[in-house]
Picture 1 (cartoon, rainbow, N blue to C red):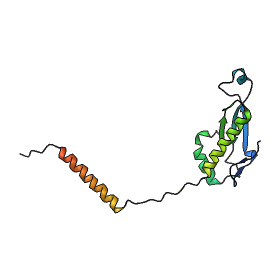
Picture 2: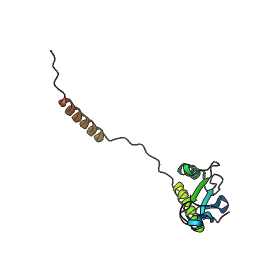
Picture 3: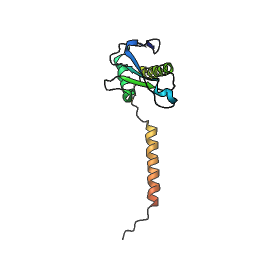
Picture 4: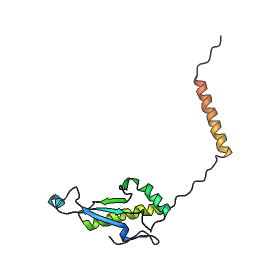
Length: 143
């Protein structure tokens, strides 16, 4: 269990929805890399979270479809630094960014029609291009 994660002034993720584990990181670190678990795997069970509404959960599911584990939880990892605390902060920031993106309601598209002038310009251009291509053809010989 971790501390609550404040997303914005209206949304705060409760600490019991976030679980993190420290595992051994790959990469540079010398002999230290074999002894210290500095990589952070942060799991956020957003499906059971009461902090997010259903539309936000649906958008988050689409945004993070490649970061979901078998149980449908959001799994974020961080191994930027050799410091466990900094990696935990980075993983929490990644979750915060994803939730902020999911909170944005996309604008609904209003279907529009081309104007009469746009249709006329398109047809005029089509006629010109067709005439140009017809002029390239060899004249037909009708006997």
